[in-house]
Image 1 (cartoon, helix red, strand yellow):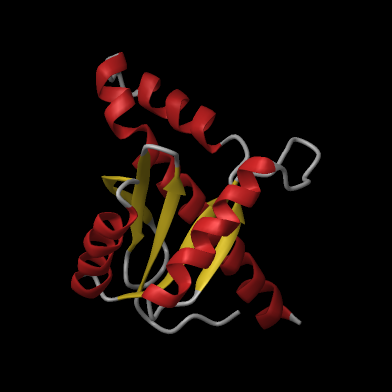
Image 2 (cartoon, rainbow, N blue to C red):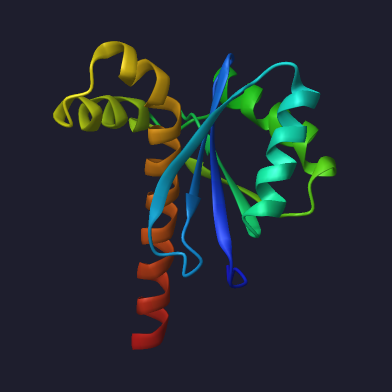
Length: 150
């Protein structure tokens, strides 16, 4: 998939909070951006819409929680319903990315950075979103390199 020049935005969707991460315009590096409240949904959409416009976002990536064997379970169904509700409210295409282990990885990164537990709780969703987004950016870079070499 070729994405137009501009930023990608990733969402790590939880029941209470949604972590947001952004790429740079060259779609090379992902950075944690913010955490938004998941409810009420319309307020979330209003805040997200402001970010999408202000940051010139060209694509949204949503973490999809697959089970350890790679199948979709109840959590993935909840995320699919979230995507179905969000899709008609935004102009950017929405893609998904396997988010297994991202919260554990985010917790590890923040522990290594020396953040206290209350600091980690406030940041974990946006750090997880940045891991999801960096995984997508890396995979696309590998795909582009592979295509060029053929």
